[in-house]
Image (cartoon, rainbow, N blue to C red; front, top):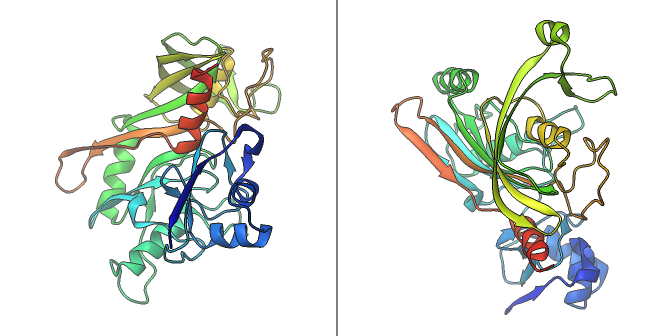
Length: 308
C-alpha cells in the first residue's frame, strides 16, 4: 500500500486523531485504528495514542502497510544504545518514566522491560532487571538511561550524585532569554503550594537543595527564545522552575506560571527535550555521549515562531 504524507494545517493543531481523520478523509474509527496500530508517524516517530497533540506544520505520514504495533510497545529505533550494563532510550511525550501510582501500568520502564524480553536479552520467564537512576517529566521528551546490573546502578547513581553526568536540554521559553547561570535553593513549597526557590537563609539551611542551571540562548524567536539548558544539579522540575522564576516560563507550562504577565504561546505540550546525555560507562570506564534531535512537534513550533 502507498505511503501518504501531509502537513498539519493551523486549524487542525491539537489531537492527532482529528488531524488524521480530516487530512486523510476517513472516519473517527479508521483514524484511531491506524494510530493505535502504529501506522501513523509524526516527523518520523510512530504515534500510538489518539489524543497525542500535534502542532501546525508538523508532517503526518500514513503507512497502511506498516506492521501492526501492539499498544505499549517501544520501537527498536527508540533504543539508542544497549549492552549488558545499561539501556539508553528516547522517551516520547505523554509517558511517565516510572509509575506514579498503582494504576499506571504503561510507563517507559515497563516498555523497556518488555523490549528486553522481546529481543531475548533477558532470561526467559524472568522479569528483566532494570534500575532507575533519573527521570524525565511526563511531557518531556528525550534521552533516559536505565541500568541493568547492580554495578551499573551503583556507578551511575554515584555519577548523578557527584553531578558529573552530562545533561543538556533544549526548550522554548517565553520572551527574550539571555544566557545566564541560575543558582538557587529549592524547597517543596515556596509559599504557594508549588516547588520553588527560597531566599530565606534559615529555610535554605534547613530544607533547601541547591540547584544550578546553565542557560544558553540558542535562537531568538517571535515572543520566545530557543534555549539550551545544562544541568549541574538535577532537582525535580529544576529547569521549569528556574526559567519561570526569571520571568520566562517554558512554552506549554501549566504549573509554574504564577506572575507571568505575557500572552501564553499555544503548544501541544511542555516544550522541553533532553537532547544530550553522557556518562562514564560503569564497566569499561569509557566516556560515552548521545544526542537526540528535537521531536517533530517541537521543530514545528520553532518553525512557526520563526516565520512570524
